[in-house]
Length: 443
Image 1 (cartoon, rainbow, N blue to C red):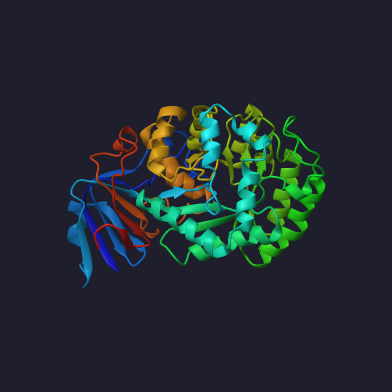
Image 2: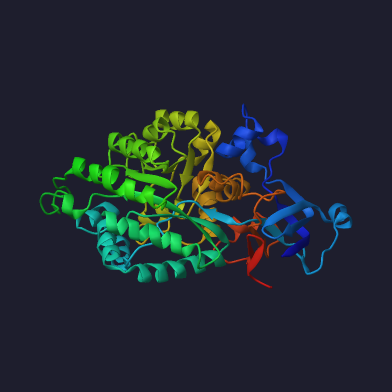
């Protein structure tokens, strides 16, 4: 397919200009690790822009007046006049728990009545509730329900999504979730990237006695479950090539930094790239662990230590921030401005999951980031596109509009990019293009 989009009011290329790459960093290094500091504010805007697409790749980018006379229209070329709208890269949702069984609206009602997320977990709810439902659900049911979520994400402009396992907590069910991720790539337009997260919680069968609801504790065979993850789950998942990344929930009441490091170092030996759920509930040293294992991303980061952030910066670890979760469970928001001022690349994602954040809408996350994380509209858009792509090791392929990159684009019916957080909650996505093909909008 040949496609030209012309007369674009604001074309957000996210292609960094040489003077906005971040102090002390060269262009190549910035592109690998994500954009930092002032670079996050440079969206590479071209007014009255034009994009030429050939098959699934971007062929040319520039101003309509300069580029159009040089283009040779091939037969069957489709021309879209963007009518002074905004064109930008598709959103990259780099942290979700997409595949799961059941729902937890009863917990939402409890939280609305004043019960905390931790209290719900102490009563046997939370992650372990979804584990029960996911283990019981068939692969076909999990696939059907995930497809519905992906359909909604696509309508809001998401073109790439990461999907973690972690609701199986046993080898068979973890593999089942990852197999669904693989199936989804052939059934709908959004690219689904798989992360193995067997270290999401300790399953009931590794608790030596019933969960003590009064104390919120039970004796856990921690070493036994970590051994299962490292010696049974990982070899089978790696053999079937089911996961590109490995994640660990390193926080209060779940996995310790020492356990996280052991799991993530083992995952690296099996070819999986480390990620880590870090310091969401308390400061436990998870950000430090992210730096020590050179994780590609540390995620949540509501309570990171200064030492942890410094280690992350030294390791090139991207901070994936999830303001929708803070909103939903009424927790603090991550110190985003401190991270940006330190020169840490910041990305945004929905954290879609059945308990602590059911949001599927990336423009809404951009609005929350501006209101509660202190990001500017430009920084938030960079975080939801290019930096999010880097958090999935895809910054060389998606997340910006440049010659030779994959044509994942949105046409937004708005007068400027600042409208996205300004009027959040309204869907202005008019057209979605994935791999050069129009998947939402006029064909």
